[in-house]
Length: 364
Length: 107
Image 1 (tube, each protein chain N blue to C red):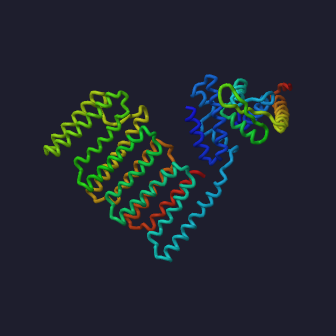
Image 2 (image 1 turned 135 degrees about the vertical axis):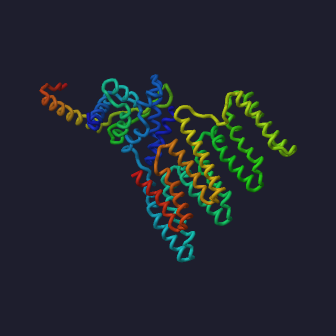
Image 3 (image 1 turned 30 degrees about the vertical axis):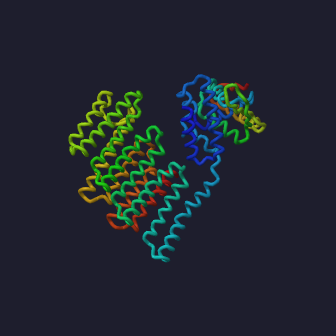
């Protein structure tokens, strides 16, 4: 609890651009207060009450902290970036007739603001939509790899998971994305849709690793291995994939025996459970809509945008709602949809200016 | 009571108790909370602000429970300020009691 409290306080002070020396001193003092209160037999709740909510504390301390000196330098760079971008754009345009894709230099404006105004973790997350969009456009325009190039968008939620999840849960949380990417690649390039779908079993196989009893874990994992081996044997050697499915009775029966009726990994209790369900439904709906649009409306080129709903939903559900956090995703959708459907990429990049505007309005 | 007004009184009380003897942060909070109705989480920010204004000096002292503790000591400037605050406070109270029809306790 103490570590968590101090961590929250550190985050708040960093948000206020407090200098490292001030942050260290304040955290040290609060660490002492916490220890002294603990030594007097106070509970963590009492201490939290006594010290105050970290955000409130940071506000109270604001007039005693020194703002980082390089903040001014950073603001100068951010303020200059629109002019620098225009100059580079003009040089590229008039000099080499590179109006397109020279307009991309304007992406430097929001990207600089994000990089210079966030800590490394938030900057990486906020930059991920830009980088993935650029990679996607590059793969599409240059190599005509719209499909399966759209898979790069999975990196947006994946990066967010890697940076925000504890190691123990990270692999489970990443497994749906890794499985889907592997499945699509196996299917597209080797036509291995079947038995490629078996990679999805990675999700429950990793999910059950939290099982406490070792023997249960071994039996459970073995049931999957046996089922997979049986399925492959029946399919490849005996030529009957349908009969091979019978092998999956083993893991299903094991799951029922061990009291886990679903293959969903550890679910938190209370209101968090509802949020996890909403997020899971969002992910499944996004995949369904994407596949439907792709198959029936030849929408591979634009339907990937639906995946941007996933990080947006997770920000709204699990984080503080902030327009600044969501704006990069909204901007990417506006940029791409306007550009693709109305063929105005040379204008639609302006949507990216919404990101620094939202940040300025919200933080003012 | 107006928050700013109360904060001013708490500042004066903090200066006063630390003038009697040097104290560490938690001790100040405890002492204040036993005698007056104070929002405990405002105490450290006040200590820090008054220190940055030069009214307190701080020094570290080893303890037997672990890391050394930071102690606060009133500076000469702090004593001067406290004197000013006390004068203002007393004359303010005197006025209030006069208005209420009672007598001020000038101790």
